[in-house]
Image (tube, rainbow, N blue to C red; front, side, top):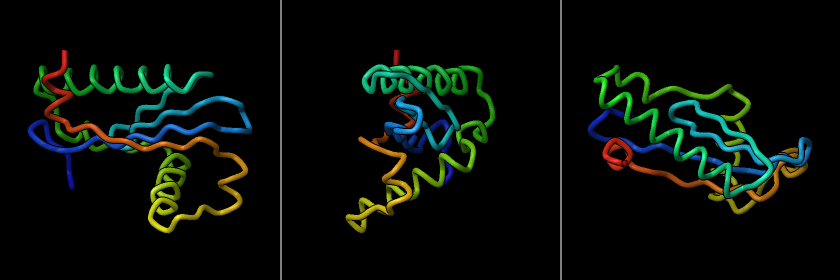
Length: 116
């Protein structure tokens, strides 16, 4: 589904990268990435950044294409693997070795456009 200013969903992933000992937050639909040492702060910063981004797109009547961007492929691969692991109740060992404490969530675009 393509996101528009009137409808759509932003999907998020936050995980702990055990190699770098940091949390990585990604909004896979607009390509935002936030990194930090605290899961809650990364989540908060990621949501706030995406709210600001979406609000600007809405207020300035910018292209809907801006709401349909992807982060670098490495993050999409991790996101897709996590989603598949939820479906299959398993995750491959290579991903387990670098990822810990993974979480996914979503927000609707209209709620972000109207957010204050």
